[in-house]
Length: 292
Image (cartoon, rainbow, N blue to C red; front, side, top):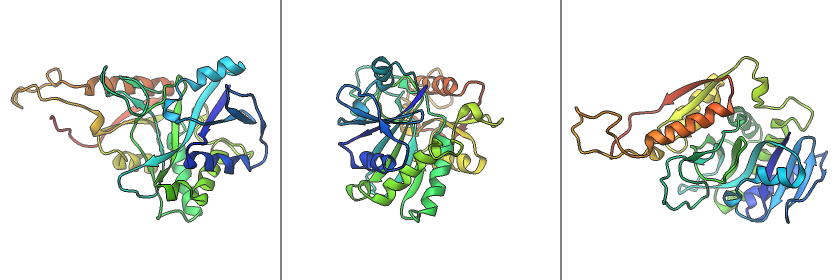
């Protein structure tokens, strides 16, 4: 079983950390995937692509078909874009569980779909906070979770690790070095114990399944930081689409509330459950939801 680490030359916040990581010891050239080159270090396979990552569907299946190696998990290195332009280092699961059939998908995925969340998300958030603080990136950079969003389609547990939020920060070498160190230490490439291996959870088996709140999930993140729990899918309020059935609030019940909210929760819960076999999934609600 191998770990796919995916970067693209079209994104400075992706290729920057990948280049910093490849400058560390132990790498050698690996097999190619179509026109993409790869590099090998222990069980890690770093792939350099040229396309937008959210459109690179089923990389795990394509790698297995090309090399015969089974993929255990996928980690994408990417830029983060935000209207605030605030510098940030983020980690998050992926999926588009709230999207209806026929709706346009601008950032990959497919209607009613959620990837298996990579169990490393919670432990890596905590490790990234430590690295960012030691490298004096905070408080300039916010270290944060993001809610579940975008593609690409995958079969394996998946996460995105991102640098935001403008060109200036995407190209910051200190941020790239911090992400490279996160991967280096997080995967145990330097000889230490890897962070976020669910198979070695040491009896800690509680997984936060976030429902509601904003995109950066601050209340969910407080629990993840303080209680050291694992992280499953995080469904922000905007992805829990509810439609007013026209009844009075006294008559309202969950069967009457239309929208994709119910399906999104079911799909994200089942994906979380599959990613953490034997785990105890705890739904954490941020606040009440407003029916439109």
